[in-house]
Length: 243
Image 1 (cartoon, rainbow, N blue to C red):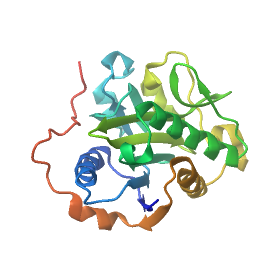
Image 2: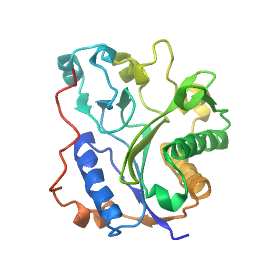
Image 3: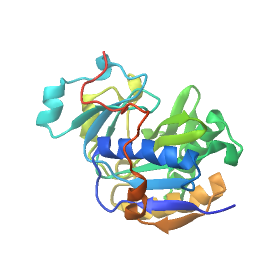
């Protein structure tokens, strides 16, 4: 199979501009102007509400989030509410699922498998929990999944907690799951925890196996020519939370 573009962002990214760009790149992928893409990055501190996100799962008002330097955005992805921050590895595949022979359920399974195999490389046993998306450990949820599928093309994807400050999750009910703790590799492994760059390389290698797509390195700059303003799509993010 042809290689997908593997794109690494070297610095934490604000959420909303990258959400807009994903929409553009998905349009370009649908038109076969781009190959499959996989973005690896960290986000600046942000709370996002997915399509099923509920304001009652915000435990503090937007003003408190802003005072703590945490942005708040509505997202086109599936799922409820989650938190992003530096130290969390985010994987955003922009794939044509038909070419992979998988539907949305198979794609979700593969993202979970990607997280589980990545955890295993660092001696952490992760697993699925029936009725709850993501990758779990005995200490809590380590990877959250929320994607959007439109015209057979995926955007958004998975967040994998490496060594971020988990106190940001105290501002929300993560994924709307009351009583389910959130954890990270650093919390589980302590001084044995890997650097985020090592986790990213592990995930890159497993992506090629799980999704049948080797990843060829490309730079973020190579994607910029495809970031034209969408003409027939409403921006999915907003600074105003849903009601």
